[in-house]
Image (tube, rainbow, N blue to C red; front, side, top):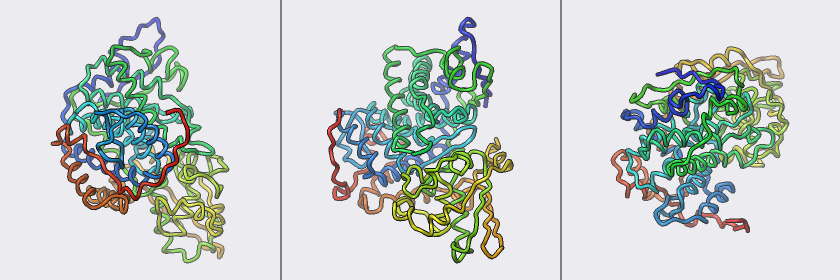
Length: 501
């Protein structure tokens, strides 16, 4: 790996493009690296994972809205939409919009956390959509997805966005553009311009994940993917971009991030080295913010030790800076304590999540979020007894550069009304690669079958799983049909409100 120093340069210095971060990213996107076996298998795992959560969210309102918008843009040789017949094709950027929203809606796919946050699986829908429309094969898709993961993971390691209240999709736009560049075997210059366009158009604030969290949280990554596709299209036609996008005197670092005096270090693989950052990422067993995964597992275990939650006086959770300030009481969001809050808000409230998991000894992507569940009297009482605190040791573990030591858990101290105390901690989720029960192919398939149960028939399930597990050998015609069609009776009646499209 190389360490790329990134900082602001005055316009008069005329920074060479070869010295710019966007160019160095474009170089690895256009190099001749060969995918490793483990990385190929993980790409397959994540496509299965994405399909699982997309089908599970098929009838949810944001997904329906995104799909209706996409269906207004049909294209004979375009791309497919999750849940619909593969004969139905739309323009690839709209397929990316619909499928990306479906994947993100339940907050139930993969994650990578470092200096910033990310859901690298968000790279898959736009890259996949372009692959279908442009007649690419399975190995082309694998290479494109591996580049997307490589770029996003390393940007997340090197550049913190959230401290400036910038949403993490600002790292997704460039990674998708780079991944499409690899997929289509574009020249370095074209990818370089595409990355810059994608970044310039995908910078937005973290208000989408603050206070009353709306459905935009599901739309945000698909919007970034759609904009990245459009940016690549323009640059393939010979158009340029604002440059240098990271280092410019009036650009991202100078006026969006830490300013002209800040230096960032972004790791990137050497040219032609295997892209294997995907192996550092991890999926979710539970439909909730990743920083809640280990704490859900902890609460499930504590359920067996506490017979009656009414006997609890107070629960203090000691955890990392990010967990405390993003999904804990440190966020100072009253909405996180509101039984009438949106699902998107509740899955960013560790107080709510811990209370339900402790009370039920379980977690379910639908049942744990219903209005009836959130307003249960015993739950609300327990919920209001929970407080989070930042612990420097947990923050240190969260940011440990060694993937084998990095962890995202916490410690729960439960004070009982009789004066007794229960203390337990869990560093990493059970499903994490270093956890008690790391997710393997069988677990991804189990998750797929669980989330698609009743939505698709057995024949459709077997067909998809057979095709996707042979991804590296798929021809373009096979890739065009790599989709899942739900049972017609499972498609709820959709109201078509008058809109623009």
